[in-house]
Image (cartoon, rainbow, N blue to C red; front, side, top):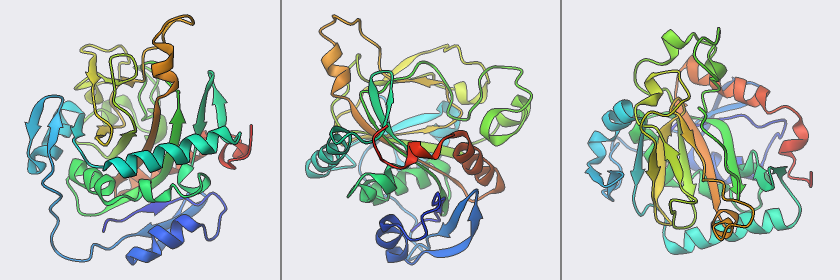
Length: 298
């Protein structure tokens, strides 16, 4: 398997570690932020991924080309990575968790940070072989680090932003990496996020990206593009890319139901480098109050 860095947020031995780290011959190699650092060891020399289709919107992309496409465009879609039973199970687990009053309320929606720990029974989704293989392929490396980020969303959307933590051109330090824009917005991806959308997407509820924007610090999109996917597809993108969530319909719009039913999960991986460790630590510190991670009602 791959190398995963798992900030544990004070939890010494979670079910996530027991089931999805140690079960795959993980070894502790240090600390990241306030958590433990683990590495997965791939069981054999074969580094190929599944032959299932990869695509960038409607353009077919061979797995061997994926890293180059993500390096130049900043994102790609992997078709049919989860089966219908997996999609259904994940939707039920996330919806049940929020219906029980857990998570953080944001703009009328619900978000659960560190969902791999705090949504019962959901840890398998973030360690799914198809998810990890997609991150490995996008980064073009055998070993990757799990940064500790594993969110679940229900009806949540956000305007144009970058997950690198950068806010605008001219920031003295560019977000979570702690680097100048001149340094950060160059070169291939260091950290990527995998988005797991658990329903068919439309122009109302889909992810929107600005291809190529991972190589410039500006937040204003130049070529906004809809990432239209079916349930079971995965999307991977460089955390530096400018992107946005679903369109926010008017209060009385018939499209409001489409956004309300939008359930998704996100997990972030990076190359096994100090820059990834800097990102992991900074994102953990940026979360603020620990109560957001407990899974208790907010």
